[in-house]
Image 1 (tube, helix red, strand yellow):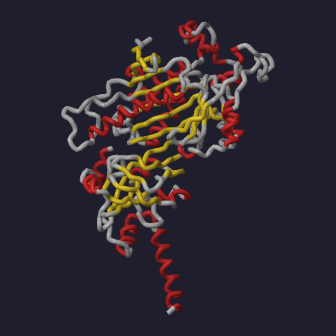
Image 2 (tube, chains in turn purple, blue; image 1 turned 120 degrees about the vertical axis):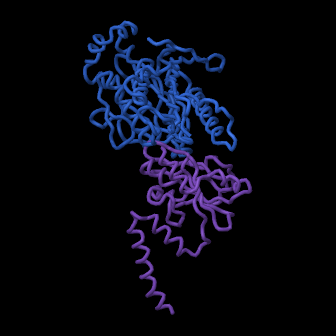
Image 3 (tube, rainbow over the protein chains, first blue to last red; image 1 turned 135 degrees about the vertical axis):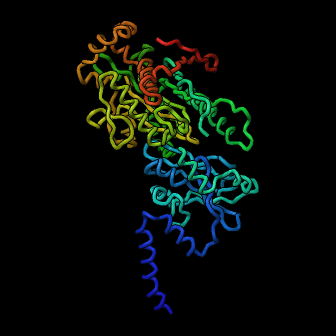
Length: 173
Length: 316
């Protein structure tokens, strides 16, 4: 049994390596990662006018927060991410930290009300991860924080844009 | 989502003389809050109709009391020995020997002390103080300007601040350049003449540029000594001195009005009040185009009993 596992593992890592090598089409590989992932199927992302996104878990009790691809591109290379100290109770629009590119620091605001219960520590060591996968909520991605949704938070979602509306919004800019 | 009411003018609030840094910061914070309040109103579930007009884009210029400001990354990371180095007294230089005066009694030879203030801007520790022009534009980057019909992206904004500073130096026949490091540098790229650091909250800008005009550069030696920054710093006056004050004759010839206004002293003329006006004019050109200067509405700020009073200033 163990020998089969040992022979399987090299194959599995080759799959992972190739999916990251097609980094240019990373949104597609992210979709693949989601369909293969064992975690609860995620809801579609919703966006704020300040270019943050939130993606709820299937049970709608928690969600991942980050900045959009559009925002990451506008900022340029991120050199530092200021992460919130957890736990942090937030209302929609409250600042939870900031992304700093070489010359500017831009606030990250929580899209919905709730409690920030986890942050992406990877960003402390590797702030550039945001540029590589700003909308990626996998463990290697550039998501910023995980929030526990409050009752008010569920209502806040109604005020956000879905992917299509957000795309239109950014094209107007 | 775009400003429907046209932006009629660019407001320039200038604080003459020396302003305590915390006061300038709170004026800036006030401006930012006005913008944020308007934004929240606009995006609330039932915004009022008709919508109140948004605040005007505003540039705040001033010269602060000596202060070392830290960026977001350095909150609480200064060591006690760094702090004592930064807060040590700075003695005025003896005109003849250029050495620090320590034993003189006359009040004009009192040493200066700097404060240390944290900020939420990007960038690292820098110094602001007498002889320097500090420029804080507070604008909503998601505003349509003639030169930026779809609003100003973050990188474009930083680029604009640099361009405007370079253009302002150009007015004194000086050449500033960009390097891969933030700020504006003298031609060789070895010494920084203007520091740059911006904070954005919901696309509303704060902080901006610190341009050394006649700043006492010894303050900056302390930042290097603390190991916080490695490269050199210069000022407009130091650059002028290095080229034998050749700018003076040009200034006398091209601007006899300003020459007279400043008591026929080049040292007096190269001051934050004048350079501040020039910076905002260049900024207005950057936003509105060639005739941008006409869009500037200048207000001179005065502090009376802790309240900021603004007096409209008629064009020269």
